[in-house]
Image (cartoon, rainbow, N blue to C red; front, side):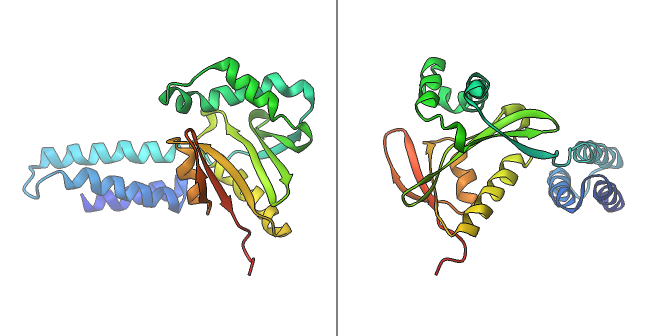
Length: 212
């Protein structure tokens, strides 16, 4: 078992990098810990097979795709609506408020092409953000990644890029997130703190790094 674990970690490191190895190691320990020390060889072999499947899953993870940005015009509205509805559908359905027409209207009321950029991954439009100047800093009106491209580190990569720009200008970034949405944990992990709440949304601010 120990030999298989060492070999598995080496294979994963070559295929997916140290972060993947750390994750893989935890999952391997999780698999092996369910077995008794007195497990017969057949059980131990089953453990190795299970661990191997985890190694394969780790090795198949994709690296971060090439991310670029493109300017937005009024003609892009329908494309952005489609992305917004797809990205928010699960969270809105969870609170019983999914309504495509309402989602379209809310975007129309806060659609600022001059402050919006389409997020492109490997030549595909996979999301967009709107970062708009306001009196007390910047407001992230919209930030969506299509579900097919989520959980790949793209959202964190783009948000870090935006926060770096805000830090360079020494301005705060404000935003609102749907209550109980996974996006709340995402923004908190990136240094946003709660400033207020209402029936449906939680409001956040992230002050610039370096401010005294």
